Amino acid sequence: MTSAMQLTNVLKTLADPTRRAVFERIIREGEIAATGLVQGSKVSQPAVSQHLRALRDAGLVAERREGRHIHYRVAPKGLSPLIDWLGHYETFWAERFANLERLLKESE
Amino acid sequence: MTSAMQLTNVLKTLADPTRRAVFERIIREGEIAATGLVQGSKVSQPAVSQHLRALRDAGLVAERREGRHIHYRVAPKGLSPLIDWLGHYETFWAERFANLERLLKESE
DNA sequence: CAATCGTATAAGTGATTGCTTATATATTCG
DNA sequence: CGAATATATAAGCAATCACTTATACGATTG
Image (tube, chains in turn cyan, green, orange, yellow):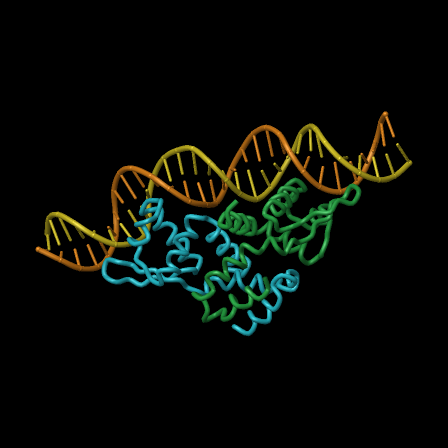
């Protein structure tokens, strides 16, 4: 898989509001089981499950099985394609986001 | 339009590889007419035109008419929803992207 | 004005998407 | 084992998407 394809995957995955809400909830909770995500979600359990699969396939979340429960947590490196892409073109929007490139390089 | 909707728009717009290629080409060229973008593109002139419209609607590019030609250039602020979103959750992927939030705030 | 060039819009189409309900696959408990 | 719980998959469907060809609009040129 090329890096462009990885970036496409990350962007597509985060572009859906419902799925992004799931992702943000996982971020806030730190670690949360699928059941917890279904509760308080507007959509059905299968819908949540499908979103979790998409997030996992995009490398944005990782899972940990504990008995019947599967706990999801964020995989920060999944955002690398996005951060790297922004950093690669940083010089072009430097007026607003000065020093972003330098900082991204430092954090490698 | 809420900020979440703006973010969704930016993500959706950049998620398509063909459209993102158009955007990246505009970045590299600085300013370029639609004709130039059609040349060297895999898709037809109307397809390019539709992508340009999507990019403009998302606030990612601006245009300048000059006679029959319309020159497109990047609108760096169009990326703000994306950068802001990343910055908002920075603490959660701090291990990789330390200080991003602080820097983004400074650049306001 | 008429022809031409640059760009946008219209209309149609196959593919993809996100959801649903129904069902299947674990895993635990009694 | 059998019932219950947690999660995933299957199948189907309406909506959206990215593209095409055909056509329209706008500006320049002769």
